[in-house]
Amino acid sequence: MASDTSVFRRNIRSILKWTIYALLLLAAYIAGQNPFVLNLFGVRPILILPVAISVAMFEHEFSGAIFAAAAGILWGISSDTVFGYYAIILLVLGAAAGLICSYGLSPNLLTALLLSFGASMITGLLDFFFLYVLWGYNGLSRFFLTSMLPTILVTAFFIIPFYYLVRLINGKLQLPK
Image (cartoon, rainbow, N blue to C red):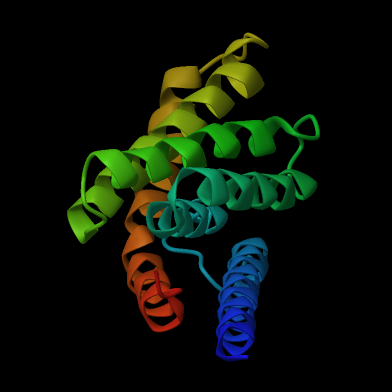
C-alpha cells in the first residue's frame, strides 16, 4: 500500500511540475507577443527560446527536446514561417541543451548563458538566412546589425530570470530517485 501512495505522489509531482512549465511557457509567449510588455529600446526579445533552453537544461535530452518542440510550435503559430520550422529547430536545440547538461557541463548560470546565446545565435542566423538572404534583399548587413543582432543579444540575456525560475521549480518538484 505504501508503494501505491509513493507512485501517486510521484505522478502528482510530475504533473504539477510540467503544468507549471507549460504555464511559464504560455506566460512567456503572451508577454513576448504583447508589444507594450517588453520593448527595450525598440527590441523585443523572443521569450519562448530562453524558457525552452532552461527547461531542457534541467529535464535532460528527451523531455527537454519534446518541451522545446512544443515551444517551437507555439512560436511558429505567431510567425510568418512554415509550420514546424521553429519546432524542428527548437527540438534539436532542446535535445542539445539537455545532452550538454546531462553529460558535459553542469547546469549553472554560465552554462545557461552560453546555451542561450548559442541558441539565440543559431535561430537568428537561420532566420536571417532563410527569411532575408535567400530572397536577395538589399541592405542586409545593416538590417542584421540594427535589428537581428540586438534581438539575439537581448533574447540570450533573458535566460537569467528563466534559469532561476526553472531551477526553483525543478528543485521543489524534483522526483525522488
